[in-house]
Length: 153
Image (cartoon, rainbow, N blue to C red; front, side, top):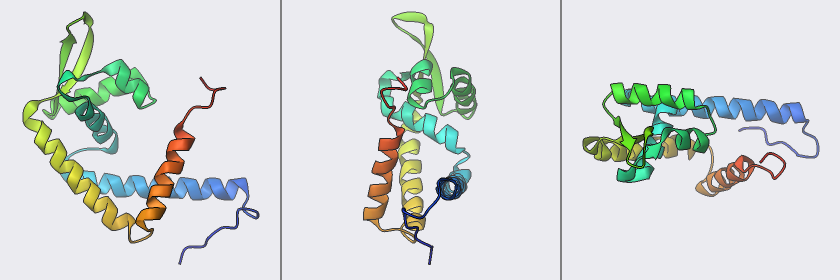
């Protein structure tokens, strides 16, 4: 059984160690699930956000902002996804200098199928350690911490 910490006694560095370990374990789990699909976690995240944008697609700059990373990193990831055939770049109809990323139509059902496979595998593994309610709380806590405070804007 995993040791539960008393928040009144845990040090900040102990909390940081637990956070780092959890992040690494979840990343390795996600990466192992995505490997048979030929995708990395970063590629899957970009592909998912692109799929969410639908037929209209999404600007590379918007992806970088949504994923809180650099435009260069997103461009590199999009290049790799394009080489695998998943996405294509199109000129923005309102500004030809801007590139829009869209999922190729034949890959829309493939992305949905991968999502279902990844979701099922993650749940199997995660629910062996936590309850669905605990996972819900965890994800909601992550969302709160991901929000930028007024000082950071």
